[in-house]
Image 1 (cartoon, one colour):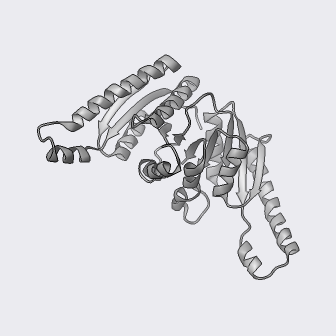
Image 2: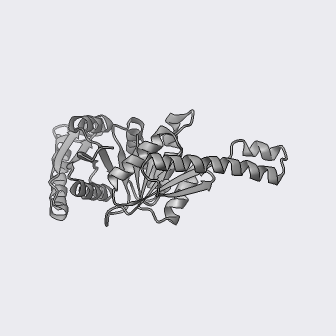
Length: 291
């Protein structure tokens, strides 16, 4: 991936969005990338409210004016704290359409947004705006969770040996060039349940697992070499990838996970609803999703 040139923050002006803006400003400062803050209001509920409550009042304009003031105040804070001059935009319309339009107009190569508090609230968010952004993926998406304190130090990159894996590694190197990058592969033994059902003895099952593991070790080493990370730490674990990724994030004290939107499944388009969505829901650190 080429160096960052433009970062777009999609904000709803919440405290979680402020975390996202601060992380984006930190990246903008360190990588000399331009930065814009975008607030989008869906006009439909305001038009309905206007009809019911205040027919002579332009509620949408008031909301956009207020959002513009708050966005400018946020930009001023970012300038004071990070010496970054952020552009400010407000728009009305479909949130996803407007975000996509600005990404294309600005040639953004990173979109940043905030995640809401605890798991239940995060699922509500991921079921709406973030989930829809993931389905379209105009560019890599960084979902920010805690308030940023420093540069990323330990980055976990789960890989499945598909072309998406190499892109995710390159993205991790571009976003966090000084961080330690850890490559993780979680493998499952094909047909293990069927083998157990057939009453295969434990020694045979163990040999079967070892064959799968050795093959995964060879592929992980080859991928590390191809990505220019031959000396990177490589972690190989057995089990469901969705759960193992989150476990390793906490065990290895990672502050960023870089995961591909899709894998090698025949149902690739559903992966956002499985492994990637699980990581977004349950991880404690920021998550960067690669197209």
